Length: 344
Image (tube, rainbow, N blue to C red; front, top):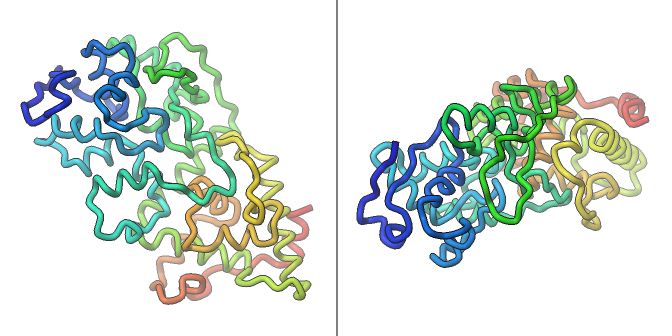
């Protein structure tokens, strides 16, 4: 089914006159690509360049493209621009730990533009989400059922590396020019440890999204602070030094020796900020005002917290005047001997 565009489409009216109906769970960039194929341009990138859209279809983190606004207009009877973007992109994943007050007074278009260019204070240069991903089995089934492959929104989640439907590892689209997934890729089935970790991370995201957006980060950080029991750092205080060093060793042990590195590639170290080799790195990660990549926060939560602890934190009101100690004690701190054993 094709939807006829109205004359209000302006400049995009020259290139394409019909918008394909979104397929189940399809990402907006995939709809754009199928829309583009009706044009005379050889690649989507060449069309974007000629039309001066100032966009790059290079990453799931690119939450805003002017083409999306044109696309949303075609479905304006059903979706507002905001609801269209929420349904057909991963904006809710990337704003998981962002308080929208940092975009105070901005319209949805301005927020999307800022989020697309948002520079997470990236102590670990997370690169997993720089690639569009797909499930080879889904791609084959989509080709058979709909006559085309397409990109699924659910496959672009930065905390996903396994297709929940088929339990296969997601593949990356490695091409200079954006394209839809191939239909003949060979699937690689995930091991149980990968499936379990994918499920655990997804469950954390579901739980976090049930919290008010402005409270997610401060509640999670309050619990992390209570468990880790590090609120300040004094080099002359041997107890504090030990706790920080043990915590860094625990993070190194988990982040480097478990399934976590499968979700990204470690990037270049940032002096004084990297949590695995700097005494201030751990402290910096737990500063609510600083925005690291959300995958880093998910890993911290997954390593140190339990779901019932997050539920228990909801029994207490937040004291937003002190974001480091805003909750009454909910959990007990790790004993230093336990930390020593875990870090060994």
